[in-house]
Image (cartoon, rainbow, N blue to C red; front, side, top):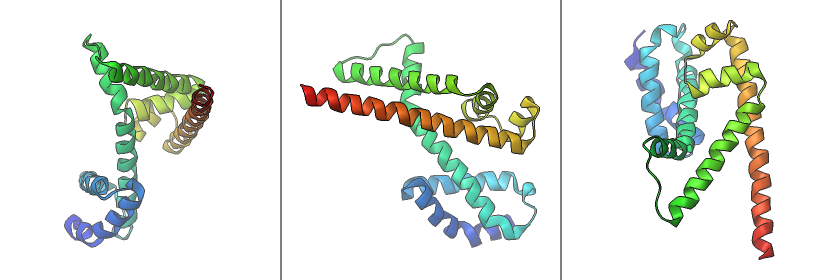
Length: 180
């Protein structure tokens, strides 16, 4: 299978898809490059060259989702690093940010606590520890399809939990702001 030929033939179409998925051209470019690298490394998994475009697009979607997840968690990770180093944030803006980050961190921990144990394990191993899906399935002693199903349910439940809590928090702050 000629990877270079396949990549040249399909990269533009997949790039256009990634713009829609990622929301901007810069992220789409980064995602496409990362997806091409992953596809090259795992080319032996592709059975039919005709499926290359769909396969590359699927890899790109996963990379984009991981990028968005990393960006969303970046403030939490930065706060954790500061806390681990024993450093404190300075200034009133930083204090407000620290409080917001701690609240978000707690919301995420609460969301994970609400998950059924089987879903929580899949989520923890795949999304938090970022183990490959096959490894997660092996550790849990289930099929890859069952692991993907649990992970999908876990992600949906976490998203719903956070949506509910953030909507309630947002409406409370609007009410509090209006009463002043």
